[in-house]
Image (cartoon, rainbow over all chains, first blue to last red; front, top):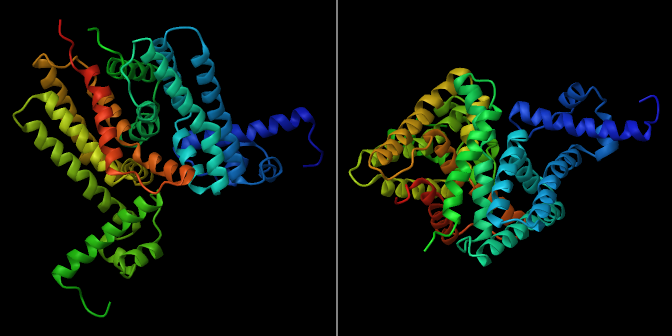
Length: 210
Length: 210
């Protein structure tokens, strides 16, 4: 770096590094990052990782924050809205599937951070993402039960079900690519899978008419 | 090794290495293996890995074979049996959840092998495990549709749904351990989750009475 980055340049380089990390994880079906690949992919000096994020783990946490914050905020906004809870849930499940389609590494990155970070950082990940999502699920299920739409189910287990359904694109891409020589999971496959998932999940949640 | 192993000793040492690899992956929430940890855990010289499996990847493939073969064989036997397809599916889903509870690394190991092995080995993994499972799902869904029990659904997408539901224990253990200080996912939690999964999945598959 010959010059101190401008404020705009600063924002851009930081975001470019996060973007490059995201692309490496997506394209390589991995959550392992090498600084040399990051430098190659972003066109930036890898010393900037230290400058902006302290270290590689800091960059991975920033990427997690970018992708998970969006989920948490959208879910909170959705739960607060004034339309039927079953419709909210349909919107949410489609959104989660869309997010994992774009960022198929997301659950693996989350779990890698939980496993490898210090106890304080693991705890912060729980507080920042997992607990808010858990509370939103409780609220949404509770609303549906109170309105007589949903069977009473365990919101925590139901969160497993939804994440499990969404977290398939990582495996799907690998299998298609390496076993069947197909290059990409398409948007059509994403939409078909979202339709299928809603068709499977919703009847199990909705209260059957007496 | 001072002596050539006996035939019994040979079987035991080979199985012990596979067992040790399985335990390391389970306890460490990882599919990374170090030869030194393997040696420590099994009490065997890590040179035996070369002797029995050629290399570390060979050992990982043997572990995959042990865990996946069981799934494929049980599923084939189940599909061939003479009882209602919805009951078969319930038995199968409980079995898959039980398998992933015991071997929470299983899907990650499968995907790691698909990603890192040579194209020939990836292809063999598809032929040995993924295609037989895919065929069994087609057969089972088809049987249910013909008997008027199931809605016609895409068996490949449904396989995603089931694996996605089962592949939650890896994440669950990590989150409980690192974020909440709980040491173990219990058998009670496994059974509750299996009940929940069946309650959610089955109504979406079963044809509703006209």
